[in-house]
Amino acid sequence: MSFLAQLLLAFALGPLLMPDSPASSDEQAHSPLSKVAAITISFWIIKVLSTGMGETASDFLAHRLGPLPAVGLTGSVFVVALALQLRAKRYAAPLYWFAVIMVSVFGTLAADAVHVGFGVPYWTSTLGFLLALGVIFTLWQRSEGTLSIHSVTTRRREVFYWAAVLATFALGTAAGDFTARTLGLGWLASGLVFAALMALPVLLRVRLKFSPVLAFWWAYVITRPVGASFADWMAVPHSQGGLGWGTGIVTLGLSALILVFVLASAIHKSRFAVQGEALAPTE
Image (cartoon, rainbow, N blue to C red; front, top):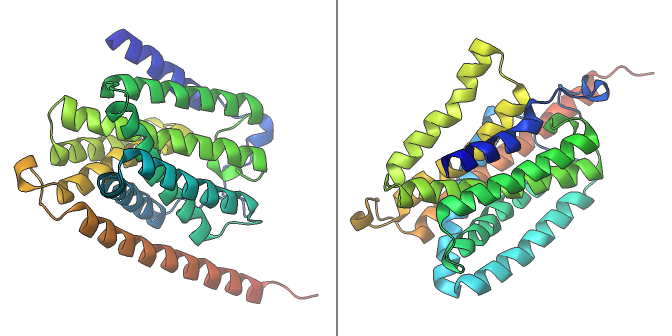
């Protein structure tokens, strides 16, 4: 298993280590045509909040509706959210984060269904989703010559991006369950471990000039078990080492925080655009 895990990890990360093509070398700055949110502190805050909200919302729906109806319902909403995002002409914070949230909820239910419905061990599903992510990255790199999210300016690149996002959520879900349940670390300890792993690329970036593309996708994958582990810790009962707040309350609380940050992000972007137009030279 150890050798297989190393082999799949090398396969998944291989495309991230490849240099960008000459055509994409100037795409390191965030393009105004990109339909992906700019990478700021608020981006990572909303991302972590959305992963936690997706975890508790999926648990809430699975217990209330049953696993299969919950997968069907969230899958349908996910398709609608993604269709709205793909049809949009430019980046819109509410549409983008609505799609991310539905990826989080649906991806979590789908990943849990692999274990609960088919009895696949968490370590097996973790390696399986890692392999799927590696395939997506390989196809994306070969097709576009770059995996930088700053260059997501075409429909094809956007499809690759959302396929990778879905795979990262499923991978993070399986990995988080593996450490918390299979390894027995529990939710709080798992959250702390993954939080430390998430910060690792920052240190490597400063010390070793770590690839910014690899650093981004590394952190993007790790945010999933970080947010989910802390959300589970808040939701599960005291008998399971949690705070016992319940999945419903935690879901509502995280949803409210997401709404505040998304609205603040949209307002800030709108004000910035207005100021830019005001400062633009007139003919």
